[in-house]
Image (cartoon, rainbow, N blue to C red):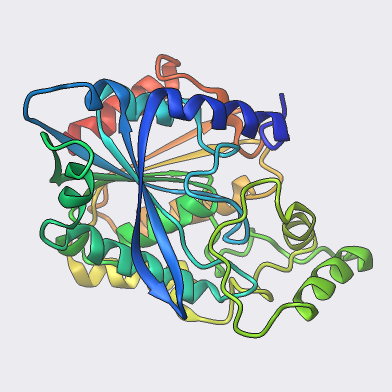
Length: 329
């Protein structure tokens, strides 16, 4: 089954309620539009009757910052669900403003505000204990993960925000190289397809001024998203023209904080949406400029989202999870 096929989303959407209890909470409001975080409690953890404390796994969904929902069943890898269930960990997945209605800097503002909300005394605990009075989140043991654009947001959270504020212990980023200063990412083709340019231009022209969009479950907006990706339009329509979107800026911020949480980056060799060469460039820069950074880079055969069907017991997953748990738990 294609990872982006509607059946994938339908199957995962049907399976998630069987494995997690869900609580939705508004973490900020912009122009009367609530932006929510989903709190996913593994069923085994929710069933416990005595006092329990569980680590937190912050998840950012993918979709090119232009589509998807929190979390999007089409993009959420099997092994990530298994990681949350087996640890067990409380998974928190925030929504955020999307391009091209908003700019990616608005998305980064939302992510920063989410981390502030997460650590406000009692906020997450109160939301959870409204349903599960004996369960307490352990906010001293926080990991973050994201796929594609979500991986980019996990890295932005880890590099650009003070780890003393986020309390991130380790980050996991799946095919995350969306930084606008990586030459191999979303380059404009030598012969762009005018029809794809028109798809995006028509959508942008029809936008209602001031409209905010924070959730479009896949395959919603797929024609526009694929047109932006395939014709090299991501920088023009929301992911460029600002230093905060660059790896250079993120690395400089990380240097200023003096400490960077360990990072595990995952990439497929045949990725046609986030080029392997772009992730290679990102990893090389991180290793060269952050000499003390503990960084694990796993490259496996496959296209974008190759790991959606991977299991926790798969050798490469088990090795990486064992590595991150040494920092997280």
